[in-house]
Image 1 (spheres, helix red, strand yellow):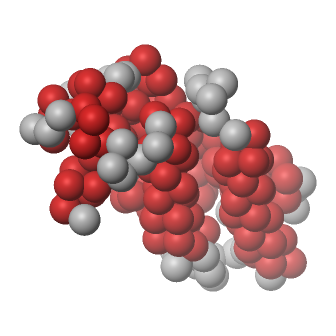
Image 2 (image 1 turned 45 degrees about the horizontal axis):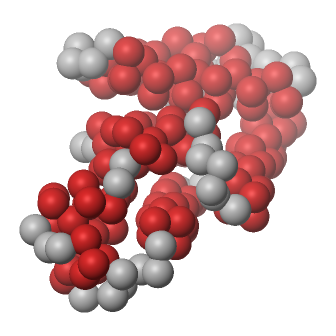
Length: 191
């Protein structure tokens, strides 16, 4: 099992860095095995790729969905997920922006479905906050889109401005965002 894990870890990193152009030979070299040994664990590169995507989907959506009862927790949960892994961030950008043709449509559809479920969770939280008059009366859809655009903009900035550490600004960014959507007549919740 240790060899299989090394193979998937290597393929994950190579896909993040190179996209679908990584080779099984490169994986074998990184793991320190012969290319033929990979086939003892995976029938093809496509099956290996599918497994690493499935594993990452479970980890990403499970871990962040543990904290789905508060907008701030979700905001920092998504950002913190990538906090120690530049490779994970590259992996997701590669998967979402340049999905390989060899990936089954069902996997991409699953990514979209899980993302939509998270979007709806956030939207429901926003509706509750609007009804409590904590947030300004505005389109919950617009606020939700702003919420996720801010997160994805920050994550993209991690790649663009690397190695400048923008993480140290996350609290201030959250506070500015929260003030922008908060009802100025109500001081019920801190930023």
